[in-house]
Image 1 (tube, rainbow, N blue to C red):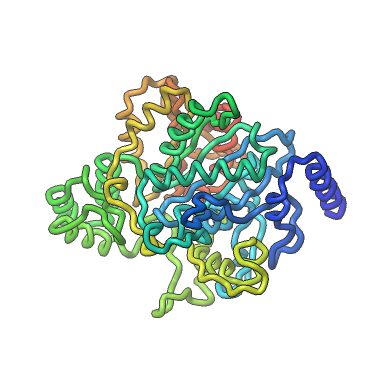
Image 2: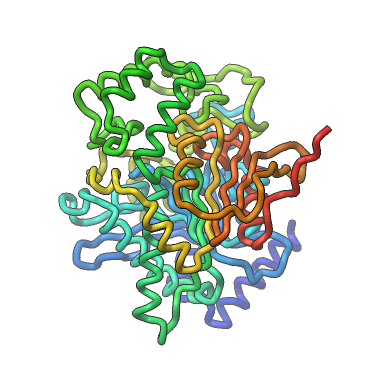
Length: 478
């Protein structure tokens, strides 16, 4: 460990001496974190200005590659869904980043961090970005206009933040870029890819953004397909009654609603709202974001019971039903916020939350737009695309995702097959490869946040995509 830290310190000094770090990147360096101590890899976090007039800035965290291959690795930008969920809090500290909440022998209120053995930093440099403003630590001095969002102005901020990031970390400009995300990032990611194409056409004489592809997990994409998949999943898994199932099909315009959205505009009203609410009540004993996972047991006041039951049947040994609560407790600590450069030393800690749909207003027209034309255009422009789906998700189920992938009308490049987790040799899911650059893969027994449920398989899947390799060899049949 001492030798590793010494070599890491030398690499920092060499990079700074070579002027690969800007003053801002040195200022954003995070050498240590509370409960973790000195870090044995390079971490940066801080604010990226996106609109000087309104005083708007988005919070970011960059976790550099820490694998054993040559350091010439791609940059992967991770965007969380919501809208209004923190990529830093959920992505970096719960799902696919270098840390997980340490729940061994810890109460929720005193949780620390442990290293994630399946971090995507074993495959790439990973950039986490909180957006839009008022998500996570991101902020704006305009407390009125900047709380109203839609896909167009969010995409503009994503591009502005990415350009500001390259200014602060110029050494990453020449690395291939991949975009990734889950849930409502099904809108964020393909729209940002399209915006990058437009940016490159305007600025190619200077320096193009080296975008090569994007990956999306359980992405909200097309209301007609995704809503139909949800209703069929709820009924097929015996989560709702036959009366509620028939009521949803009869009363809801599945092309003009977002059945999953319960806060803010969703297009759900009248009889449709009655049946949608009945469905959520009937399925209330299940974790809809992964029906094979237990729910965190809460006290009457909404805080987690301490201790939790001794869960025996978990999606993976590190799965923690209360991880949201532990991350929230950790991120609200003043010393943590100071270490991450979210607040100035001595300033009052901010009341951070991982998801807050009430903090912003998101236009329903954006929510109900289909992303199929955007995917088609991106594929025609040469993008490589990975769509993956955890097959126990009840919010954006595999059935709906597979339906819209097939609706793209791409020709299969290979027959549907299983793919295997190389560590266990077991079936990790199914994969369909299409001509034109799209791969659709499922992750068996994973939920909405697939890396949270099946971290080993999810890491292998993203590694294969970045390396332009097919997912693991077909599983052996005994």
